Length: 297
Figure 1 (tube, rainbow, N blue to C red):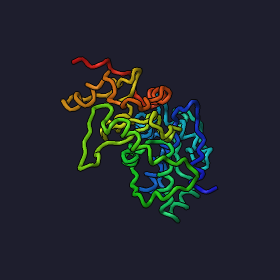
Figure 2: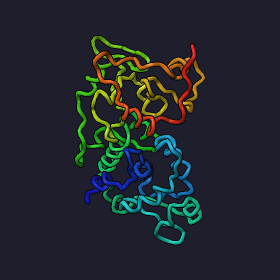
Figure 3: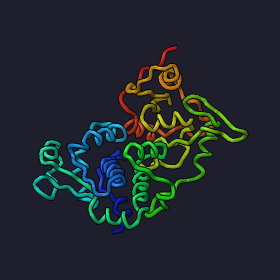
Figure 4: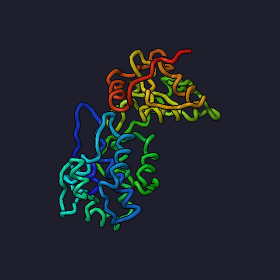
């Protein structure tokens, strides 16, 4: 099986669209380390905190541990683990991995293939990003795991994937009359809108359709905050702001905290509202913590 196809078929726990990016995050981290040191092993006790940070920031909203992917990724044929006693993982327990001196790395065949074809690393990383995370997070995720990629490295589609509908952006911006649904920003340069984007409520990577009832017109700032779980949309299409968000500046209060409880700006009459199923998915899988009470004026 070709390596890109193998990565596309990672075995993951799935139920009702729940996010489980544990293995993709570990693989992205391992690719970043391979790029820096082609033979370096990742000793679990040394990288546990970094992997936990990645899971906390980009993983599911419920608490989880990097021990799970460190052990279970072996079954996908792209990762190997050895301990002080020899080859083989001791299991998925945190204590077992720490005390046995468990260390993991990409399997030798994959490392050799990436040395022969330098573009392979970029293709694998691009696929992992496309399949498990929204585009607004790709750049910062690469930075977080130490990957340096350019568009040429990621190559074209290597496996059959859903194709995005190029009409969605324009349809969503029209529905919201070229205004950010959270703050009302409507900037243009000449006749062209600038700093406005069509955000998927249910991520495209998790079967979110390219439909207006799964879209929001958002400015670049609020799109990023929406995809990071700082902002959400609750009942009555009112804005949710996570209590986990901390900001003391006037800008943070004005552009984020003060949004709590406000109704969305739009969509215009006759346009589809966000479908309840898509709102519920985002609240369950992306929005972090409890929402703040409605802001008082």
